[in-house]
Image 1 (cartoon, one colour):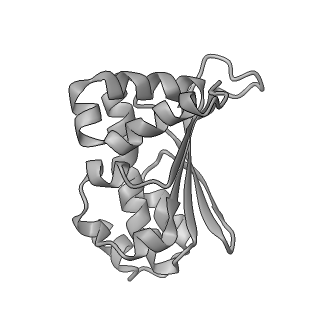
Image 2 (spheres, one colour):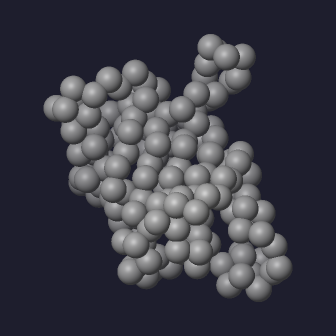
Length: 164
């Protein structure tokens, strides 16, 4: 069935196919300039599971979205929270932005999760996502395999961005 999703042999809309990749996909928003995927990452047992689990699903989603050639592919990664302030049980952990033209030129099916995690053109961390990313990047494997992803964390501090 997963091969049917990737080959596009099923006559379903892209958002339906993306939602089949992972039950963690809450919403898919298509616009002319970008595809936004709202993703609830509830793999909170470890920072490594939170980061790598998301990017594993995101890589599969990017393979599906590649056929549409969006200028940007944006993931809005939610993280469970006790009280997000608005009555919901999740808050934005990070937003991950990929350049669609860069993705078009790559063989995504052959990419590893770590390679894909290190390819975004921008990552914006919010408070809870920043904590997960700090733990992941402080781990020897995290920084070793995804130095650019971890670099976005440091870049936020250097540029004085508010990372709440």
